[in-house]
Length: 344
Length: 111
Image (tube, rainbow over all chains, first blue to last red; front, side):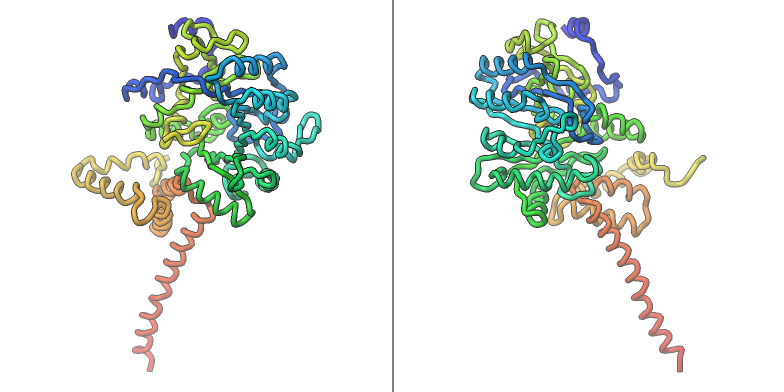
């Protein structure tokens, strides 16, 4: 079956180095990772972003033009409508709010009764669209009126780490944007509007324990800026694309991979997000996760045919074999890593 | 060119057991129990202490290792630099407090 997949899918995989062979690591630990469900449809609707973060696995930037087509947006909504078992829509990018169909996608998914999550980088509220100049100040109100769950990257509760990773001035803007979200009730005690933050290490090291960091963030953001939020998700940097380039240039690729391998945690492996999520690219192709999407490791159904939204078959996807590469060691190191933070 | 303190040598720390395995095993068990667990002190606090000691003892291996460990246990550069200042001020204080000895002896030497 694996050969059949390779025959029909153009693979631009990270070259396998036996030392970091993820599937061999699974075999050594007696772990098999079949899909469990498809409860989340994660859609990367654009690679356009107002920021250029140094660790970005999407290589997103103000110059990118990739967008999910209007037909693609319709198809995603149709899939959500036809499949009650897919309860969550996770909209990502780039800065997904810069897609012209973003607002309608959110409103219509909410109308279908889906839980909608938006990967919101905070600063887009203030920067707007870098290509058209269109303002995005309305976003906090829009999110609140649709009861969207907002998930925002903030690499640290201080300026130094945040600006080092996300660019000069990002921390101050992020504080301003969080204040606007808090004003709508996001993250505020007693409100059901969820504002969750994401921590990424600013270099080739593993995240600290999620609970301890969350307590630090809450204390510091409250005391220094009067800001509140709900949960902190710690996410490990994936050794792909822009971060991989940094690792290669600085001669730290092997030491980082050695660290991920040494920290392999079987409990984290069983909780990897690709077992319950599928990732849709701007071209409608389906992947096991956003990282595989960026590596163009396209998912295939049990019949070996490449998966896509225009011939969506959930039964085939549930029986598929998830595609792994050495980057997957990032999701299984230490306390684990997923779009929802630590998995252990 | 060969140098002392090659950073790659840090990976060879385990080799100290080559000619005295049982003793090395005892040491690494003790080391792991002290530094690798949350106890009365958190792993974060222990890493900051270790970073300060690494500077006081001027060990480049330990400085690299505990800079990383401090980051991975959630410390930030301000906290790490303060820890180094604790090491520095302790060393300065230890030097200065010995001037009491000097003054004691001076008292005996001066009429």
